[in-house]
Length: 173
Image (cartoon, rainbow, N blue to C red; front, side, top):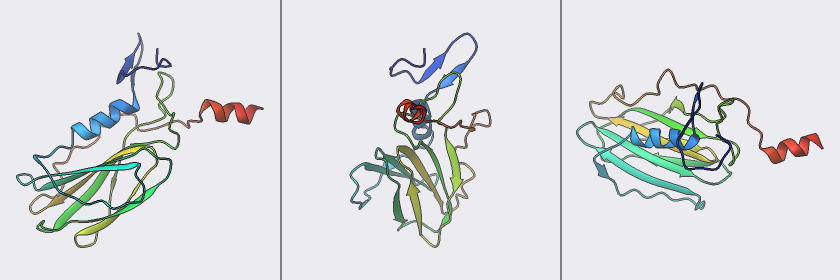
């Protein structure tokens, strides 16, 4: 039952498979990996944003993994030094306007998205959505970004409008 609180990443019944937001977050982080962690300084007043930066010299890729557990958007500026020219920057993320958003067998309220990020030289700005997990993928050197993990075409990226139960009750009163 998808309405029970559980740590399951996938729900299923006789008819449907339901992928949870937690499943999608694990999928994004597991499919965008590198060999080494990098020392990266992220300076923000928001302690609800966590980060991890890793790189892979053999594939000429940098991955910036971000988690925003707060309810506010946060802009970050990324400046890459020591890479032989950035060729492509993209992000995969999962987010919701509401902390309580979940997927059920009837409605997919949260699913991953993918976007290209404009960059200038070796820097760019990225806006982290509230209640989100994101992976920024940076291709440099001979890497044109074509080898990066792409979201499966079978993944239902059409989300339905989610309104938390407390908001529904408020509207109905």
